[in-house]
Length: 442
Ligand SMILES: [Zn+2]
Image 1 (cartoon, rainbow, N blue to C red):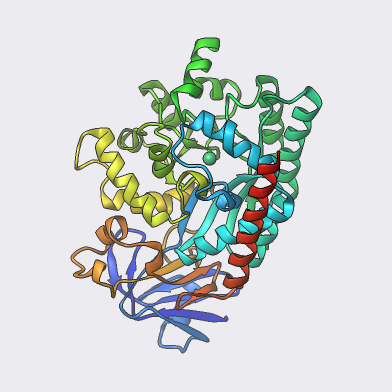
Image 2 (image 1 turned 120 degrees about the vertical axis):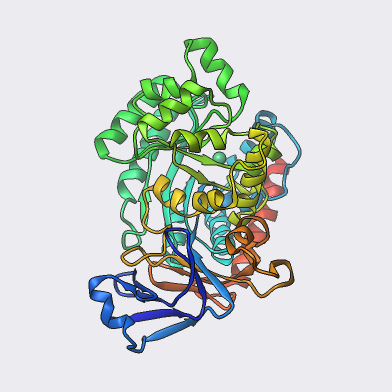
């Protein structure tokens, strides 16, 4: 067994305890074999004093599960700060969609590299991405060493029948062809953009084909009242009931946002086992509303966290998302004890892994070796009364010292090993500048 041992740190365990323990990883299998003296059968030998092949120094740090960014559009890093301070609908129609129409596969690769670099730097080891040119995004994920659930985003409004059908076909092709890529680190989903931007017949056909191919469905749901009201007006039913009617409400499916949900929809999500990906920064920035996170959790719905695209956030730092989720959750529930620190940490780790049905999210023997080491030796993290409180309220992505995914060290002492950080930033900045020039010429 080729072993990596993370030594000298405190470890956030799967049961919520924080213990001073070493974490031993089987690099070949990409799994954790021992945490302190707790070990899987085959890992006992590695833990009992045997020297590891490689060590990673976590002294003064907190070892946490790799964070999961369960909803983003990673290449939108190119549009970071491009159009701010507008409501969702005009923002999409006047700014984002015209810019996206000019994106080339090369741009998307450059933007995805930048986003993935940012995620590795801030301790994220898995993400879900809905975008275009997904073969290029998959290539970046493969090279960078992360895990992802990827899908081509379908929009059929404003398209003729042939173009709309081609978009659905593309999403289904991506979902079947890329599944299992990057040694199994890439999984896929059928990803209609939302229940209002994709026509009913295309939703029905696409979801049926996704069920046939056994891939999950991911879409934006109940994000704004502008998206809920037309469904209620035209169909006389709420969006989650419509999704159920489309057979798009399964236990492996996961919906972004879930801001405007009524009690019947929360019950329906809980019963179906469909997860909600809460994107608090995007919901605040676009004034979409306050998702009922405390009620969703009390009902037993799996809740994950997502940054959404960098144009509506404007970063991909899941630490920010934890803090925003805890703060906004209290405001939404009008209760300072709602959505506590431990809840948002769970949402960013195990909740994310469960929502995306990807390995990781827990540090325990037998789990995937996806973790990050957070440096606690900083003024804004002193003193350490409660490390979990720090994760939720005080730590930032830049406090991450090491990032490990599938047993491979992706970042060591803040240096990313799988990507050339300077080249990635330079390429993305040039691509973004060219893109804005092209949009200006339209
Ligand atoms: Zn989104």
